[in-house]
Image (cartoon, rainbow, N blue to C red; front, side, top):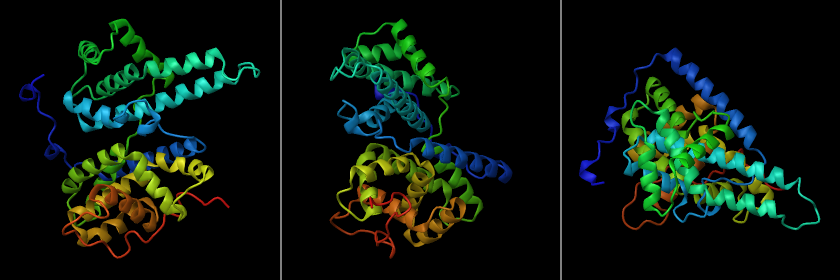
Length: 336
């Protein structure tokens, strides 16, 4: 489709802060905090994430694929994040099911035929499942734009995947059933926007609308560079450049901590927008969430390092005095 003929994307300037009653914000923030705590607990012991490029046999990674697809179809940013989270939850469920079925196979077979076929089926249908997740996410924001079956089938055909409308519907139903039809999942964007609302009421010196635009860019970056950013955070937390497997396993739950991600993104955005007010913003975030200043500092430093570059030539903005020297001790413990 010609770019000039596409519908207009929702403007960032259309997003309004300060229009919700404080009581409603307090209730919503408490609900998000409870959801986040539950997600972190459930992620404990998990071995990996399908948000990471190396997990998936797609060079661009699922995040980049979804973001490019959303741009092509002029979807809201919230749809992109929702699609990635639906895909993540679905793939985790599918992988758990495969492992569960594998444990029922005879032990005298090194790699049972059923185990191989299940793995092949998972990867063969990955693109179809990804498209279903994007389509479902678009339906959650039906007030804006829904991606039709014809659009999805034409796109898949252009990529060389020949599927019928029935197969597309079955794929969508498989995703829904696997997640017990619970697809309205929390996303980091919801945490970012909620915290920006609270910052506005708390008298933050940097306008929420300005922070919002930068936060969206940095949040995209975290999804696209998910693996290296969190690896940097892990190395900082244990003060060791070569984490052990056990340390990596303990750190998995940190990757599901959307509240921590949100404060890191906002703090990094505040430094980019107005580094003189950076300390005030970090103080507000600590007061609102209870997350240690050191943790907020370390996460924002990891994001800034991968976005601006640690050795970027030419003039650079001054680095805050306590940025980079702290470690994220609460995130993961060393293997003792």
